[in-house]
Amino acid sequence: MEKQTKTKKKYFICSDIHGFYDEWMASLKAAGYSKKDPSHILVVLGDIFDRGPKPYEIFSFLKKLPKRRKILINGNHEQLLKELVFRRCPYQHDVHNGTFATLLTLCPEYETSIENFRAEHPYPKDSPDLVEEWRKSNRAFFDAMDEKFYANEKINEIMDWLLSEEWIDFYETKHHIFVHAFIPLLDFHGEEIYMPSWRQASHKEWQDATWGCPWDKYKKGLFVEEERKGKILVCGHWHTSDFYNNLDFADSPTKMSIRENPIYRSKDYPGLIGLDACTALTHKVNVLVLDEDEI
Image (cartoon, rainbow, N blue to C red; front, side, top):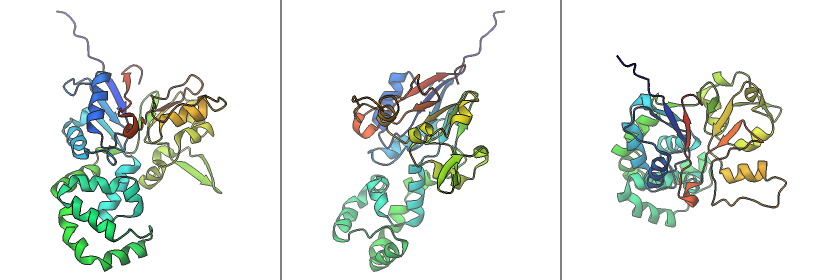
């Protein structure tokens, strides 16, 4: 009887999809990913919503994948959406980060009225007291839209999912550490330093770690302890053209355009891989493919 060989898993890692479902599907297809192949594992390093036109399609695709075939890592935009829905009132940063637009997309029948309201009632500064005063002065409008806008069926589905155990703060393998931006660090008199116990960091510390510049923290040596153990940091969050321009091309007059943003991999900085393709400009999502032996 012929011995059957086990099919090795293949990992498809991507980040910062930001609502661009069609571009993401095209990039996955080009990378060879198939949702029908049980050996294909999808790893998403956060920021699946905000800015693009199809957040619900991304949610539906990921939700339907079996748990054993996906790894979902929290990004700062997942946190922004949860905060906005719980707060039920947009701050200015919800507008310029695209989070408010995600809610508009999920509840399109309210788009016109809210846009008109915004034009007539400019947002206050991001102060809880000012926002609450602004909300009280426009109570009738907010009360009318609360249920359908912040608690419609799509929002409830997505919020239940974002708050579920499917979403984790990091994923570690023999050779790689997958995060949204960076590992949690200690604040020592205003300076960030390596935290040996980062794997036991609180969820709040991980939320803080989803912000900030990955290549800058790496350049400062804040990942060197893990790199000495043979680890590679794989992250999103920051456009990869900045990785190239500030690491490989730092002393060169030649700079990479923000409209390029290929996967960042460098022989000079082997412990760092960056994935954020700035999809809104490039119309692509970088997909890193690693087989079971590599990972």
